[in-house]
Image (cartoon, rainbow, N blue to C red; front, side, top):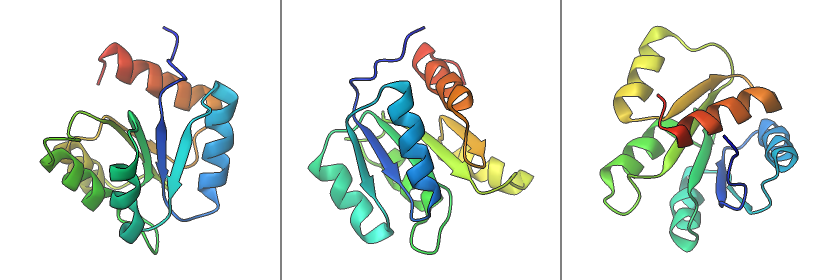
Amino acid sequence: MAINTSMQVLLLGGTIGTDEEKEILEKIGFTDIIEAFDDASAWEVLEANRPEIIIAERQTRTFDGLAFLERIRASEEYKHLAVILLFVSAPAVAEVTAVERAGVNAWIPGTPEEAILRYFLEGIFRGLP
């Protein structure tokens, strides 16, 4: 299934890894990529734009991806958005349980390679868990 690369992507985090993730998204074909780097600006950037996909780091010094996911899922306006959380390394079972309970569409340990991110994006829009 081809990914609709005309969709707007919101990339959230605060580490050098987001540069790599942005490059990967561009290689896949996305051109409308917006970014926020901390908890203070993430919601403002979301409200000022209309992303259809959110890719967020799980935790950085300035951003809590789980708290942001919980806020999205509690919002009538945004709860339908596709959300992928990225972990710096393989998460503990409790972390996986927490993000799955919060309603994450997918989670990926580490900075994903292009093929892995493409696989998860295709799966999300095919309706696969």
